[in-house]
Amino acid sequence: MRRTRKSLIVFALTLSLAITACSNTTKEAEKKPTDATPAPTTTTTPTTASEKSEVVEVSTVTASDQYLKFDPGESFEKNAVYDAYMKDIGVKITNKWISADDVQFKEKLKMSIASNDIPDFMRVNATQLKELTEADMIMNLKDVYDKYATDETKKFLMMDGGLQMKTATFDNKLMGIPSSYNPYQYQFLFIRTDWLKKLNLPEPKTMADLLTIAEAFKTKDPGGTGKPYGIAVSKDPFNRDTGVTGLRAFLNSYHAYENNWMEDGKGGLVNSDIQPQVKEALKGLQDMFKKGLIDPEFAVKDIEKEAELLYNNNIGIVYGASWVPAQLVKGAVKDGKVVQEWGVFPIPSVDSNPALSQIGIGVDEYYVISKKAKHPEGVIKLLNHWIVVDNHPTPEQKVYEYGKDLKEKGNNYWLLSPLRVGKQKDNNGDILPKAIETKNTSILETKEQKTRYERAMKYVDGSDKNMWWEYLISGPKGAFSHVPAIQQNKQYLQNKFYGAPTPTMAERQEILTKKRDEIFFKIIMNQVSVDEFDKFVEEWKKLGGDKMTKEVNEWYATHK
Image (cartoon, rainbow, N blue to C red):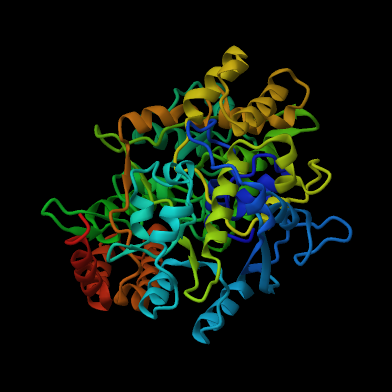
C-alpha cells in the first residue's frame, strides 16, 4: 500500500486485501483508518453557512495507490471525496502533482523540496521535517493550530500524553502534525494447537517450552510432510516491517531488541543492537539452525514464500503481529472448513523476567504547511473533519469511505483523504473478547469494534468459516485478549529516541544495519562462531556507532 509504514486501519477491507497488506508490512495493519473513538465529550465546532460559502483552496501532492479504484467519471482531479470536503467544510483540495506510486512519490517530493516548489501542505518524514524547519520553508503551526483545531482534535492527538506532538516540536515551535498511529502494537507467538494436542504437549509458558515444542514438531513431523521445521523465518527477519516470519519478537524473548535506543542505567541511552543479550539470542537461533529447526533456505525466501511452509503443514510456529491470522487463514481454512488450528500466546521469556515487546513512538511521518500557504486554516479544518468522520461518521459521511453511492465495493475511497491521522490508543482488547464470548453487542463502543464483532460472529455461527482469522485476532483467546495484561503490567519497551535522525545516523545507519544483518545471518546459519558478535560490536562502534551514540545522548540530555 501507499504508506508502507503507517497507513491507518480500514477494517472494512476485503479478506484478500487484508492478507496482501499483512504480507507486505506490519505498519499497514497498524495504520489504516480506524473508527476507534467513542463519541467525544467535546465535538467539533459546527460549520456555519457563511463559512461553508467561503471556500478556501489548499494544494497538496499525492501518490496513486494500487488499491484505490475510481468510480466511473472520477479521478484525482474530481471525485466524490474532494466534493464532500468542499461541501461540508468549505475546503477545496487540489494536487500540485500526482505520482505513479510511493517510490516515485518519495523521489518527486525530494525534488520539490530541493527546488523550493512545495504545495500548501504535504506529508514528509522526520528528516525532511527537520530540514524544512531549518530551511525556513514551513510554518510554525502553533497559532493556527491553537485557533482552528477543535477541542476534540487537540484531545485526540494528546492521547499518548503528548509524545507524538513533542516529536514535531522544535524550540517550542509546532512544525508539523504527526501522522499518528497506535504504537502499542505487540507481537505474539502463534502455534499449531492441533499439533500440541496430537503430540500431547502443553502450551508454551517459557522459552524452554517453546524449544521443546519446536524440536517435537521437527522430529515427530505432525504435519506428515516428510520435510518439517520448527519455526518460520524469512529473509528480512529483523526489519520492523516484517510482521510475520520475523525474529524481532524472538529477540525480545531473550530481552534483546532490534535497533532500539534504551536506557543504560546511568542516565544515558545505548543502542540495543550491540548489547550482550543479542548474542544470547543469536546463540539460541544458531542452535536451532544446527538442529534443523529453521528452514536452511530462509535467507533467500520472502515472507510469502516462507509462509507456504505454514500453509502446507511443514511448520507450526511463527512469531508475528496481531494480524498474523489474516496470513495463516490461507492454509487454515480450505473449502469452508477449518483444517488447521492455531493458538496465539504472549512472547515467552528465556528466564523468570517477563519478556518485553519492543514498540516505537507511533509516528514517523508528518503533515507540514508551507510558509507560502494562503489558507493554513484549511489544512487544520481537514484534520478536524477527518477525525470526526473516521471515528464517528453519520450515514451520509460514508462518502469519505465508499464514494458517492455510500456502498462498500472495494474502491477504498478513504485513500483520497489527503490528511489522515490514527488513534494513539484503543480498548479493543478489553471490549472485543468479552463481546464475542458473551454475544453482548451493547458493550461495543466503536465502528471498528462493531465491524470486527460482526466478522468474528460469522465464524462463530458457521455462516462464514473464512472469518476464522478475525476470531483468532478478536476472540476470547485471540491476540487482542492478551493486550490488557501487557498494558497493565507494562510489558513493553518503547524506543527512547524520538528525534529526527542525527547527522551520523543519517549517514551511517544503513551501513551499520547492513553490517549487522550480514554477521547475524552468518551466526544464525552457523557459518561463523557466535563470538563474531563481539567483533561486530567493536566494528559497529568504529563505523559510526560511537559517534551516533554521542549525538543521541546530546539530544537525550535536553529531552528527558
